[in-house]
Length: 172
Image (cartoon, rainbow, N blue to C red; front, side, top):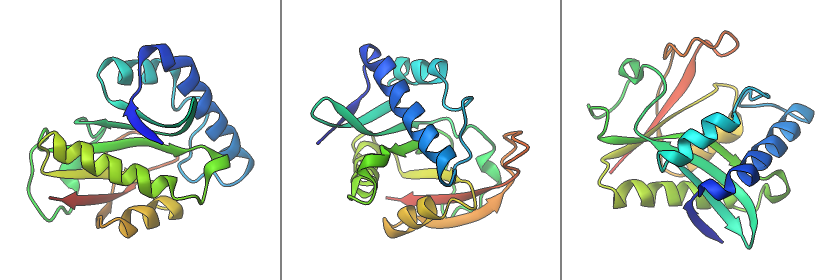
């Protein structure tokens, strides 16, 4: 499997990947509370343009995707972080997803390791992220991979159905 930046020519494929994930979540348990409004094709296109969207492929098939960037998309200043860092010193994780047919095969763990590798190779001092508090699979995945809990906070995203988020960090 190969972890690489998503190219603009792969936009429709990665958008289809996320639509498949959302459809599965809506039919089972929608832990991240995604819907047809998230992620959007425009949001994915912007992430590709900024070099922030990564995909894990098995041959020609996308089996995982994640956005890695410096924008926390909210007020991370409210976190109970163990190390004081400025924006730009840490990498944030968003839109972390695994193709449903590949669930429970270690893909999530592999993707977390790749996120850590990218952060270290680019000189970041930490990775920070947020999850929906009831997203038990994501919370467990990050803790299993060495992340520590930094509080459940209102990061002022303005999403009524998600008033607070769990914050996690991994410092290097």
